[in-house]
Amino acid sequence: MVLASFSAAIFFALITPGPGVLTTAGIGANFGFQAGIRFVAGLFVGNNSVYLAVALGMFSVLEALPTLRMALAVVSLLYLLYLALKIALAGAQVAFIKPQQPPSFWGGVLLQFVNPKAYAVNAFFLSNFALLEQAPVTEVALKFVIINLFWIPIHFIWLGLGVGLQRLELPASLQRGINIAMALAMLLVVGLAAWVAQSA
Image (cartoon, rainbow, N blue to C red; front, side, top):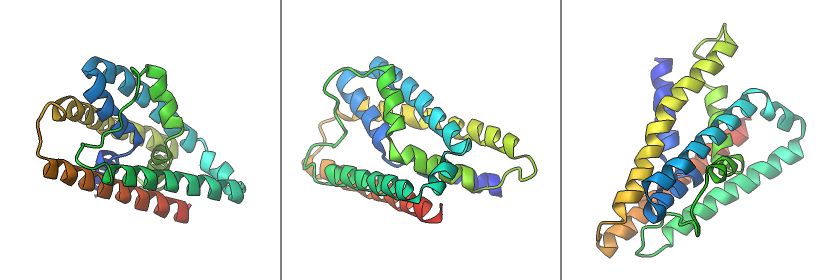
C-alpha cells in the first residue's frame, strides 16, 4: 500500500509542469529530439545530484539556519508562481519556455541545481512514505531507483510533446486552454512546495 502511494505521488509530482519539463518541451519544439536528449541527460544528472544532496542532510543544515531556509523557500515559491503566471498569460501561443540558443548537457545539470521544484519534490519523497523503516540506507537507494523509473519516461514524454505539439495548427482557443491547464498544474507544484516548506 505504501509503495502504491509512493508511486502515485512520484507520478503526479513529476508529470506537473516545472522548470525542467517545460524547458525540455521548449527544446523539443525549437531544436528537435537530439538536442533534447542531451539536455534531458543533464537534467537527469542534476536531479539525482539534488536527490543525493537532500538525502545527505542538506535540509538538516537549512534547519539549523532558519533565516536562510525561509529565504530559499520564499524565493522558490515566488519563482514557481512567476512561471505559472507566465504560462497562463501567454495568450494564444502554447507557452513552452523557449531557449534562445541550443541547449547543452551542462545547461540541464545547472538548471536542476537552481530548480526549486527539484529540492521540494525530493525532500517530500525522502521524508515521507516509509518503505523500509529498519533499513534507511536501503530505503534511500530503493526510492532512488523507483523515482528514476518514473523520471526518465516522463521527461521523454514532455520532450515528445514539445517536438510534436508545435507542428500542429491548433485553434487559438485550444492553445489558451492548454496554457491555463499548465498554469493550474504549476500552482499544484507551488502548493506542494509550500506544504513541504511548512512541514520541514
